[in-house]
Amino acid sequence: MAVFTPVSLDDLSGWITQFSLGKALAVKGISSGIENSNFFITTESGEYVLTLFEKLSFEQLPFYLELMRHLAQRNVLVPAPIPNRSGSIINALNGKPASIVTKLEGAYQPKPEPVHCAEVGAMLAKMHLAAQDFGIRQPNLRGLPWWRETAPVVLPYLDAGTQQMLRAEMQFQEDFAASEIYPQLPNGPVHADLFRDNAMFVGTRLTGFFDFYFAGCDTWLFDLAVTVNDWCIDLATGALDVARVQAMLDAYHAVRPFGAAEQQAWSAMLRAAALRFWLSRLYDFYLPRAAEMLTPHDPTHFERILRLRVNGAVPPLPGPN
Ligand SMILES: Nc1ncnc2c1ncn2[C@@H]1O[C@H](COP(=O)(O)OP(=O)(O)O)[C@@H](O)[C@H]1O
Ligand SMILES: N[C@@H](CCOP(=O)(O)O)C(=O)O
Image (cartoon, rainbow, N blue to C red; front, side, top):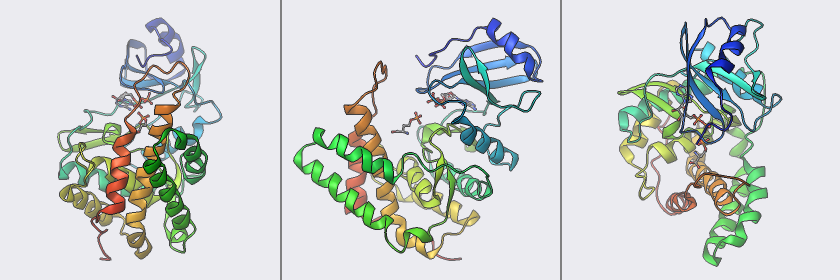
């Protein structure tokens, strides 16, 4: 399903000679992706992941791949792009831009415990700090300007009560973005889609974050809120699990302590993170792309999460040390 552009061992054998990876021994399509064509490849020097980018262009890719290279060089656990002998990490294969990255060990953790959340929180903080001096800037392309464009497009599909909730949340987020607090929040390159299926574990040991293709510059707190809203909830209800939230926040705070403005912004940011995925899921549900073969994610999951974050108490961020 997720191999849109096939790659044979023959195709790979010629192409791989530009890298110092030895001969290609095997190539196997990965079925679980939805955006790109992904393959596990084996060469004389080990196992790697080959990605052929189906939508992102040569011009768009450096932000994501150079960010991964930057982070890997600073010991953040992410796949490291492998350069060819000329140093290039993006090279055409079968008519598509393609990259080879290191393969992360393990599997994703569908039922995270506090110990997994702590690993993720600590590595996320390390990633934010390590990305501070990354030289390429790109905004989060799924940030407030995109919400402004998308909300009116999906509104006609909603009933009156749900329309009212979406309009009210958009107004709340506009006011929050215009508040004195917002510009005080530290920001930089963030992952922006760090769900539990975008990290690998061996047992309780995190081996890395992957799927950086929604990354962009945004507040660090937004990234953490996206992560908490997926890793630290009961999936059936969207309710926060206090033990997992606490484990993630404490571990993050131990690496990169939260500031006073962040403590004030936390609840609004959990709402922003829920709104972002509610909108993208509504859009994909009601306006699927032509020839889209995939079952869209359920938008009501994030509608429920948003209602809970608006109406319920959320565990506060840890205070100053
Ligand atoms: N560097 C990596 N190491 C190990 N497995 C990976 C790596 N990158 C991708 N994968 C595997 O490939 C699958 C699809 O990757 P993903 O980035 O989610 O694809 P897409 O961008 O097409 O949605 C992941 O679920 C994971 O199992
Ligand atoms: N995490 C998002 C979906 C983003 O797509 P991805 O498979 O490329 O991570 C969601 O759950 O809505």
